[in-house]
Amino acid sequence: MTSINPSPDRVLNLSDLTAGIARVFSENFPTAVWVKAELAKLNHYPESGHCYPALVEKDKGVVKAEIRGTIWANDFLRINRQFLQITREPLKEGIHILFRAMVKYHPVYGLSLQISDIDPSFTLGEMAREKLETINRLKKDGLFDLNRGLPMPMLPQRVAVISVKTSKGFSDFMNVLGNNTWGYAFSCALFPALLQGDKAVGSILGQLKRIKALKDHFDVVAIIRGGGGDVGLNCYDQYELASEVAQFPLPVLTGIGHSTNETVVEMVAGQNKITPTDVAYFLLQHFHNFSVLVEEYRDKILDYSQQLLEFEQRRFADLIQQHLAGTRQFLQTEKLRLEGLSRNLLDLTKDSLHGERVRMGELRSGLKHYVKQWISGRFSDIALLERQLGALDPVNVLKRGYSITYFNGKPLRDQKKVKKGDEITTRLHTGSLQSEIKSKTE
Amino acid sequence: MEKKLSYTDAIKELEQIVGEVEQGEISVDILSEKVKRATELIRICKSKLTTTEKDVNEILKEESEGSRQ
Image (cartoon, rainbow over all chains, first blue to last red; front, side):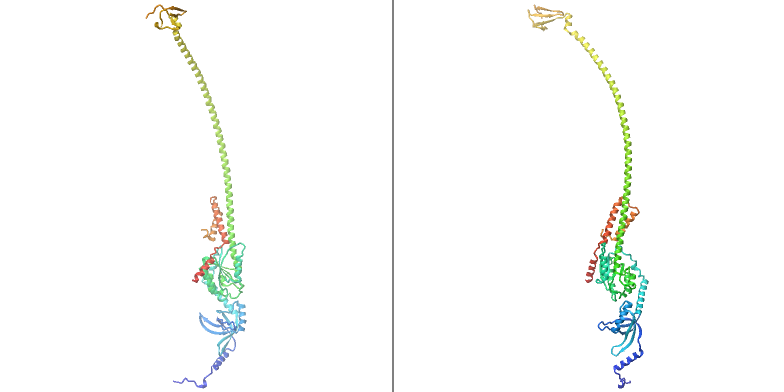
């Protein structure tokens, strides 16, 4: 077994070693090098202003290399300003950067890359590539046109607004909707979210999820941003957010308000109106269209009804005229017929009366004749009776020799009524005799 | 029943009446009935423009109360 004990003259101080290591790096990396890597963490310390970013290279998600970087406060200010100006994004986690750095070894802090410059155009290119990738993936998955294919509701009245309550964009949007002169009523519900920067994706996705659960209570979703400048909009190119917007069951209207290129979210949104006020005017326009349509229908119905009524009135008037004419004709005919009838009746009556009169005359003369005969018959009867009566007249009896004896002026029929010596009168046909009774016989 | 009539249904029915009117399919017998209905539909449509159901805020309230429990 050999001894592992070192000989004292070969022992180094740590600082001697680190100095040696430092020498190795300075000899091998004498000048700055250009490196591309992903900015995994920014680690910016606002107090000191220094940055200690974590730089990684990944292969299919697995970290293949990692090293710490350093950006001194002065460099960071300059680099970040330039970066922001060109990419419209601040330096942030998750982006790919091309940077110029010196490999530095510090005896206390160890190895780091001291970054003196970052090339924004590289990141810009990377971002453009990522954006293109997002677009291509959405198209490949068949999602790109989904939201744009949704029909706009006729009256987009219930609006789920994803915005920031205090932002200018939101207040512009609400002002246009609220102060419209036609009195159109909107019901807007605010779903507050961060609308730019790294946290926007998660924040907007969270609110979209809430709205999705309430989708029956809304007609459209409006993503409204404004007044925040043109930075931090890279989030709208991310696949996760863009695909959610593309697949959203309600039409999404975007008024993200910027002057740079259209983001993917805006491309897939049902309607991209750029500014919040334009989104509001777009909604008002739909109300207008609806209102105009209703008016148009009203006019059509009114016109037609009037036409139909006028037509029917004319038709009715014609019918009345026809009816009147027919009635007049009928009445005229009937009148003539009646006149004819009445004339006939008169004639008939006249004839009939004449006959009666003739008959009456006949009857009258018949009656006269009969009465005359009847009267003469009675005369004959009376004459007969007279003759018969004449036979009974006492004068005629006296003539034949009979006489009437009166006693005290009365005809005497019984001898007992007189006694001897009574004076009686005997009436003869001519004259009378007075006698005295001498005797009586029974 | 009228409340449940959405503007889409209302305008659809109105369109149908207008269609019938344009085709001259409406007789004077049912004209007044149809005009009455159309007037009602127009009233509904117009009132939809200027009134909201105001249920959104209640829904949001309910939703947030539900998530707190």
